[in-house]
Amino acid sequence: QQQVKQSPQSLIVQKGGISIINCAYENTAFDYFPWYQQFPGKGPALLIAIRPDVSEKKEGRFTISFNKSAKQFSLHIMDSQPGDSATYFCAASIANDYKLSFGAGTTVTVRA
Amino acid sequence: NAGVMQNPRHLVRRRGQEARLRCSPMKGHSHVYWYRQLPEEGLKFMVYLQKENIIDESGMPKERFSAEFPKEGPSILRIQQVVRGDSAAYFCASSPGQGKKKTEAFFGQGTRLTVV
Image (tube, rainbow over all chains, first blue to last red; front, side):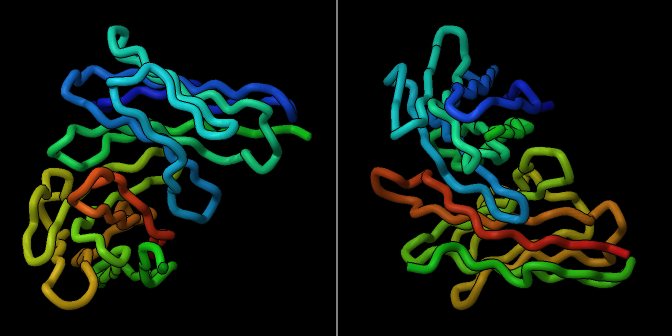
């Protein structure tokens, strides 16, 4: 049973557009929500992370929005670039548990 | 500052052989995790270790799989008598385990195991 559900499975966006990836969770004990970026043949790289005490976090062109009551969080990639083409994974963990529960991933393709 | 180092990057084993995957955590990190990624799927947690201790192995198959993180040397994920279904990418991650960013996990490049 997947604890974190991610959608869409894939998306195509034009250069300069906005990519939006959504995740939902059930376990209210989760309190750490990172996003990872993975290029083919590489390991996942930590992109940005948020905790439930804030509703939004922005780092450069990447923004996480967090809705605690809906148990949802999303990643927005602004001004998408071809170099952003990768698979993105959302994840969640409990403070003293450490292990991450991952979503199934979203493959983003940015067309020039 | 070297990241998480995994070797080998690619490993081919015949059915019934043993596979040993190695992971050296980032400098200063005392917590190690192993995850498995099947094609077109997300990562699945396998085991969480600290030096000389297995903390959580709830994601490990009950048979043929074992992991260790000795006092000296890398963490080892061992798969005995491999079967075709073990073919996957195995990723190791490490985190500091303490401090403000204690849960921030960094992943290695992975070992891609192919069982033929």
